[in-house]
Image 1 (cartoon, helix red, strand yellow):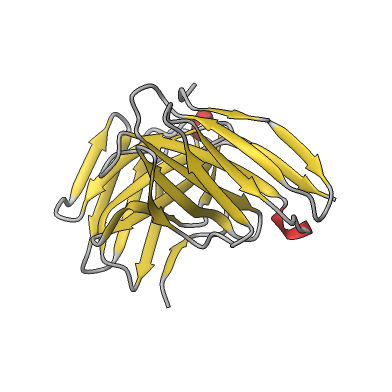
Image 2: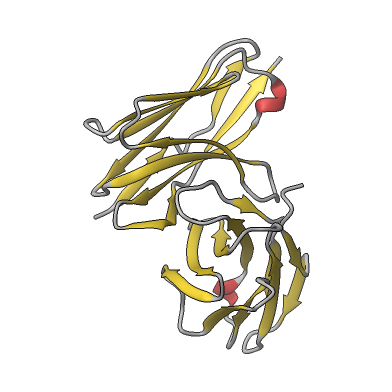
Length: 113
Length: 112
């Protein structure tokens, strides 16, 4: 069956450290993968997009990698801050249906001072 | 502020009723997407419209329908409501294709 898996357990890290979140997928052929941030009761906010032929993308303190062999994307936040505390969602769209985004269930990140 | 607006913010209704959720996309965006988010299911894609035409469909129930109007705003109609339809409903918009989506603040639907 098709699955997008993110750590359901919350990730707790200390301020200043690098947070690494994982997104694994099964039985999908993604054209591209996106990462979103969601705060409680609010809509997701787009962070980064990476295409299937790209290995890595960066934006300020954020970095995403995409390994189609491992069927995995990693999302890194360097020099994390308490304001980075939120739920992070990965989403993919497939080669034959690029408009439809399929979301993982998200990982909750808590950065403590 | 994403530029996407949704009304109403909250909706409380009874089982068997029908409701309409409204979404106005960002200026210039032709695509509108509808999602349902419940605690046990995560964010589920329902349907997408592009410039007035249905473009993609997810696991949308037959009791649910949507449309996009010439001014590009969209409405999601939910009928014969059940307790399990209680959820946050998000609308998102984009220019279309391989681009990021901009989400509205959501409508929280409670079915009693």
